[in-house]
Image (cartoon, rainbow, N blue to C red):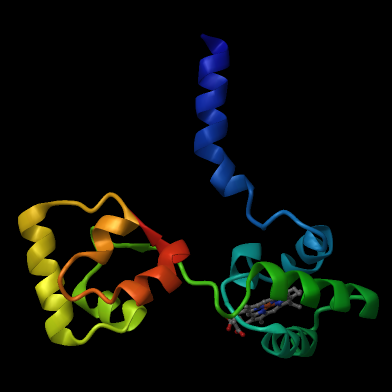
Length: 150
Ligand code: HEC
């Protein structure tokens, strides 16, 4: 019984405790990037290494005292785990027309046809099923399938 509560507690609290992606450079980032603001703020951007280097330069300008060697490690860490092209997954069963347009390159009329079909027929469960829906470009879905959730 106690164990069950412990597990529940761990499940509920872990997203709050695990603030940074686990990987090489996490310790250096944690140490240097939580002094002035929450560490969540430090990883609130998604950008390439050049972008992250600019942010680090900006933080140094604000008075961050990090070793040169740490800066290089942190830049690598941030560019790897918080990269420019990382998009949150697209839930195809709840996505709004604007999201379908921007994420899947649909025209407005295609997004409208798709949503109408989704409302009538209920939730999609597989990529194969999704590819057959109106307004959908199967090739586009194939290329984006790792971003799509149901
Ligand atoms: C010496 C204090 C200090 C430290 C240490 C620090 N920051 Fe900042 N950071 C700031 C200030 C000041 C702002 C701007 C806050 C504001 O506008 O309210 C900021 C804002 C940010 C923002 C928001 C976007 C932006 O560009 O304004 C990001 C992202 C960020 N910091 C990343 C980092 C990272 C990554 C680290 C660790 C490498 C870090 N910070 C360490 C002072 C610091």
